[in-house]
Image (cartoon, rainbow, N blue to C red; front, side, top):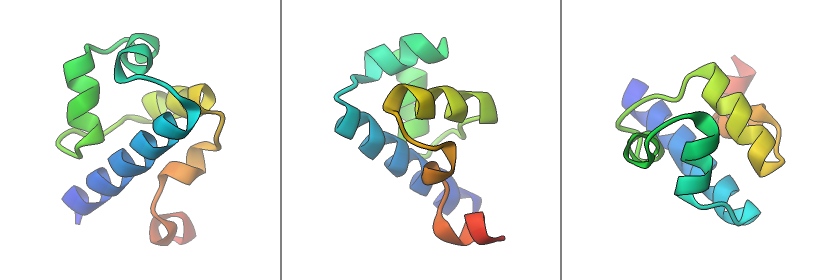
Length: 75
């Protein structure tokens, strides 16, 4: 289940970045991460922490909750 959640969150962050026209390098720089670490988070191999999700949401102009799978938001 954790793998599925990490993957879903990564896919949602990636989609928001694409919609906002942001590159992985730009977002990685803003999050204080190497681009390779952001890539691993976007692929669901590593989890985003709460601070990273909040910063990514602000950069993308979306609410942080939009990154969470619907079932997880309802819980």
